[in-house]
Amino acid sequence: MAVFDREHYFRDLLARQVGGKTEVTLPFGRADVMTDTMVWEVEPASRYPAGVRQALQYGSQTGLAAALATSGRGFRDCRNFATTAARRARAL
Image (cartoon, rainbow, N blue to C red):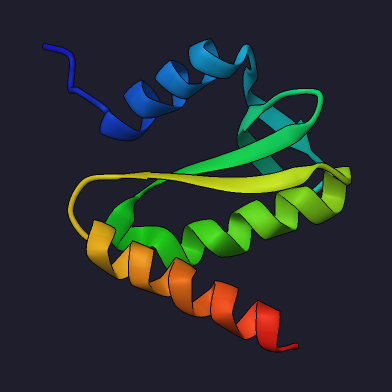
């Protein structure tokens, strides 16, 4: 019996929507989804801090815009984190 892997499901769904490639090997890690202009990390919302770090690392390696795609519980925390990060970035 196959086990449903939520992260892979959302990774594949995102890749189809944006026309990207999945599991692209980079010098340090593998990006979940990558197009010619963006690189995405796909994580459960409860793991957004790790996802942010990975997305930024992949963006710096490729020179592409980095993005984080999240799903599941913890969205409120993720949204609050993003809002706080945006405020701090504007303050710099």
